[in-house]
Image (cartoon, rainbow, N blue to C red; front, side):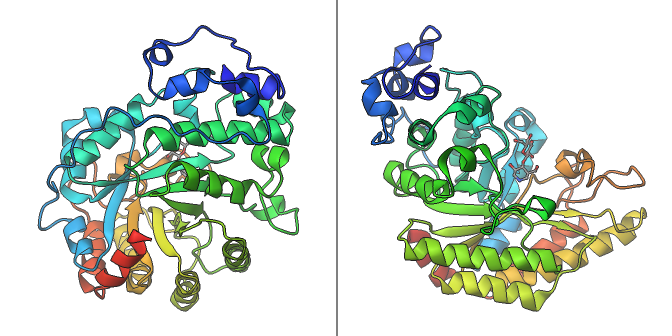
Length: 417
Ligand code: 9MR
């Protein structure tokens, strides 16, 4: 509704294209999207208006993780271990038990993305995100927010509207969206992935700044990244703003070039006073490429040296270069994991290690055309197997956490900002 009005109607009037939803009529964040003079919402000076504090997501309960869990081992060094959770999985008792037992932090796979929250124009659906947040809080777990600005997971109706909008309308839309999502969950999210995958890859690297061509870049120009961080800071100053990026972990020249771009951009953002507090390495590691521990160590240390925190946000292991034999495959995967985690856990700026889901059947790697195994077998990418038993990879994580130096004091300081 108002979103469409902003984009379609230019700067003068908000066009209500649909009747108000029950949620909007009853109050809450939806009201903020309907009310108010259109000129204050759609003009260049439009401010993100955080929603009124929601009714609440329940008290933070005592930690549910067990003393022999990944989280318990990580916490000893000031790290937090967590995983991505598809919201529908919370209907499955065994899944709930596994996640409560192992994790100190959760992140939604899709529930906090625009594709779910704004699937239909004028209707905000916070339900799946709220349910995950309630579950996390009841189990004493923290939440990451994923993700505010991404070229994927845009609802069908948003892309064409962004394409037709000028910078003022696009900025107003961005403010409304971040105001709605980060405003709704304000005070409950440790860190938001403010921008996700902003660097182009391969032949798509066309611009000198290396930015990916996206609807956000097209409508707002390269300043959209700084702007998004500033908006989040206005809406929820307690949430750390994270730049989450992929393909910066392994030892190939094109990833080294991306690491250099990351460092230069981070320096620029800090020099411009952008309120960024963390950098996230997605860490979808692949067995087809090597890991150079020294290069990785240097990269993490340089980010830490800028005063930023670091998060491992989507860790998993694509085992497609390893043999079909399960024992041999697990040896390959655990070896990669140890090489990676030993460096990661030794860097004091690293705060969170989050895997993309926790049990093998859920990994996205089985569905992706470029990631599937050539033998058609399911990937062994995650710490738990299909029966939620702890795999050799779980033991590799546990040992890496146990053997890691204690950087608790430094990590606590970085978390506080
Ligand atoms: O795993 C997520 C999948 O369920 C969603 O359909 C998809 C689109 O929203 O996003 C997947 O998660 C991606 C993440 O948001 C960003 N990095 C890559 C992840 C795997 O594709």
